[in-house]
Amino acid sequence: MASEAPPFWWEKPDWRARALFPLSAAYAAVAGRRMKSARRERIAAPVLCVGNFTVGGSGKTPVAISLCRQALSMGLKPGFLSRGHGGSFAEPHIVDVHHDSAKHVGDEPLLLAAHAPVAVTPDRAAGARLLIDKHGCDFLIMDDGFQSGRIHIDFALIVVDARYGLGNGHVIPGGPLRARVADQLPFADALLRMGDGTEADAVVRQAARAGKPIFAARTQPRIDDGIAGGRFLAFAGIGHPDKFFRSVEEAGGTVMQRRSFPDHHFYAQDELSDLAADAEKEGLGLITTAKDAVRLAQEPLPEGFREKLDVLEIETVFDLENTPERIVNETREAWRRRRLANPGTGS
Image (cartoon, rainbow, N blue to C red):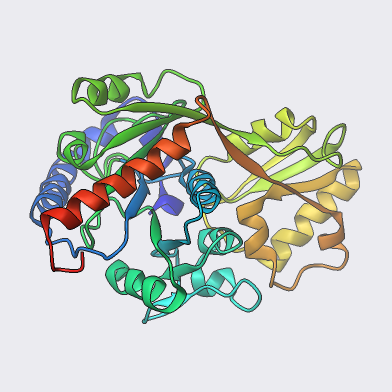
């Protein structure tokens, strides 16, 4: 799981990755076979998957939100499919931002639900039917799920962080890869290189040689006058918290203290009290990510904590302005070709 990803996954391969290689090879064989032999259910709406080759935070959720906005601007009715991290619903569930908590549906679905209906379920086919039949969605965006093989994907956009790339290049448990790149790449339709750095260069070249379009984007903080000029204790429970710390600086804030927690972390009262006390002692503000904020939203907080907390909002900016429109259009075109190839099936 991303929340348990050890630091050595993102370093050059060492004795730990080599020692775990037999387990990684076994995992890779099973994962690759599952992707190749999966019987994917065909859905009666275009399906765009925003996925990645690895576990960990590559920036998929902001990308999915950006593509949702594009679909809305084109007159479509998008809906999100999410497995949810730590969600507790056995049946497909439509996220209610006013009543659901992150403990019940996951933090990322709550972020997505501010933009379009979100079905949370491991059974993405059932979630898709719910979004189409009950909510009138005519364009579905999967946040993750590229390797699941549950439903037919019309366009798979693979997000790769330019700073972290594929980590040490090993498959779970020796590294962050969910399967061998050679087994995953045939199912990808395009690669999206996120941010600056050289760690993704090798996989970008591999994808280009395979004829996959390569797009580029970055995340940037939204303008917030309350952050610029501020001095902060910044804390985050996300896959790569250093990206958040850099974003605070980009927004004009100064990070005086940093606190990192596991991805999807639910904060205990004593942890929050310690954060507040440390910030108070040094005269600092508190700042965290939007994903952390939704986990805190319906939790009891120490007195005054919520009022002292700033939340850094980020958004995806594509290098070429027409990239989101192109991705949505290519997804819809692939769906039309699918329907023509299977007339009378409804999908």
